[in-house]
Image (cartoon, rainbow over all chains, first blue to last red; front, top):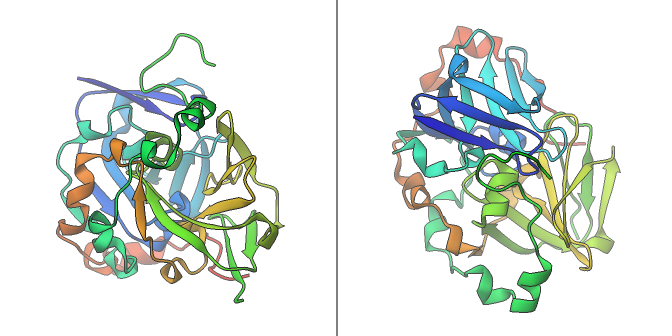
Length: 154
Length: 149
């Protein structure tokens, strides 16, 4: 089984041979800040099974023993990894098919969970075409790397 | 108006908002998913005139012809989203020093909503100290910028 993914701009791409380990979400304040969000969805991938097929991630050491990989050209958070861990905890949203990780198992770091997290599925929902006109949609031409490998990009 | 501050994980880029928050929301669109490496983005708006980068210079990626996404070039934290022609900017809620102060009111881009989203909040939950032994926690000494100036 092969999976691919990468950052938003496409400067960093990866390929995974084999399956996924545990998939979970983390609410800790470190993941919130690193991802600029409510927290992080992460899936275990054996490092030896992951190849960087285009470019290389940059790393920031968010704690003494933890590195976080990201694209230096567009910022996309790509992974976190404890020193000595044979696995990457890969950012699920960077996969070309985020659903491929299968069922998530747990939420961790809930001492930092944001108060509104549980209520999100009930928020009033709008599709992009509900608030963007066809003319808007035309102007918003995506410059994001497509959700598959490319020979040349951009 | 209360001043709100925020910034990236490493602290090289900091910002402030001197006016009110507007339109707190989450966005499921595939562009936000990929930019944030996540299931969706959580964003809150402000007037550009009441927003300022107070430290450092963020990087910018134009994810579409009219959209600028800013991030820290040193640690990657996604920081802001703005249409070039708009007088508003949206900051990532997780980059605020007090992300608990904002509650999203809408979800946008639901055509790209991932099936996993509906179940995230009902997954069994645990606290960090329940999962990580104290001796390992001690080694995880944070190098993250504190949630203040």
